[in-house]
Length: 521
Image (tube, rainbow, N blue to C red; front, side):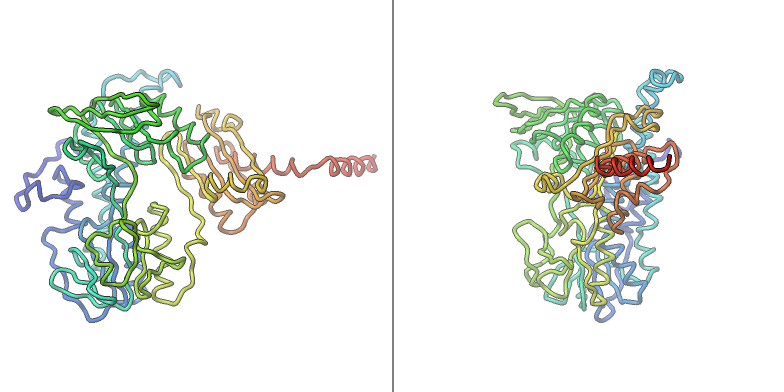
């Protein structure tokens, strides 16, 4: 990667016209832009009635369109912004590039103390971190490009789509008629109604990856996955970070003690984590912002030069004309869908973040594969049958699959729980990564896995073994009979299976075995 990549002044397009994701307009973002929203793109002419019109070219829309076209359907794909959606442009791809870089910076600073390695000093080159991200993102964007999908036989329309009837969508000066349609427009950052926030200016996931200078002081509003990941990453880059969370703890959808492990790690990395914090106002003077909040009846404030709002997501339905299509929705919520992802218009389906309570790229992908079957081939696949894992990519990572923490609590005595601390796993001890645990919830009296949580450096990789087991109906006992390479952190699963077997060895069973072996003397 060249550190001398130049910034384009924007001969064909002024900087203010460019989407935030492609700023600065250097060679990498120019490549991204030309792939996912080519400035000179000419929309094709509509080809009669389409078997499928897909609105939105994020993960859900791209997968839907690609599969349907490969099967021979006449497909139109409409995107008003950047193809690849949040995941490619302002979500998974850029955030994980930053997280990996931040982990490297942390390792460099601590290698002397932890492992007797060479001492590291200096502030590092934040601009190079961001350029590396832009270069990788641009390379990945080839896969999501308008030209690639056109080559797959998909009619790619760049522009805003609006339903004009129950079987028609208007894009620019053209009307696309369809047999079936899929809404896959994704979601956008929710912005809380905080006095002074709009006037003061703020970052969201849609703009933070355009930074070229490291913030000296960063305030993050929201302790969900995005807020926690970015707070820790920027703290490791050397920013002074304050995270304000309205709830009693971060990562509220996960088990509380698992979230506390992540909370401890954030604090150790220098994040000033303030819970029960109600943000009351934001003020700006020059480049400085003051964020005021209340906690426990007391008022306080914190200053920063950058403010990140990570306070949830809102489905993208504005301007779609859902009323004209007969698609019901509630207020600003997404389209109402049934278990087969069908809206109140039998011709129209909705997938991904716009309608799912699980705003994850892998869920959008899974639902897209399901919707092709249901919409085009009279399939009966149900969203409720999906076994959905998720992971927050902090250090350590927090991964979960199965019943939610609230559902686990509500089942109470109907669940058996086994917890293996990472301190009991040899590989975790060797790596110096013993903060965390593996926990599995079983149906009472059996080895049927109902849920699992893992807090570990590679939790996102390991949780897939539990997801596969739950999907195929494999119990913990059978999963534990698999041979695990030694030493790996995944050995925590085998240890949990061993503990389950020991629990089955009741006093009566032990007495029977003692009698059996006594006869063998």
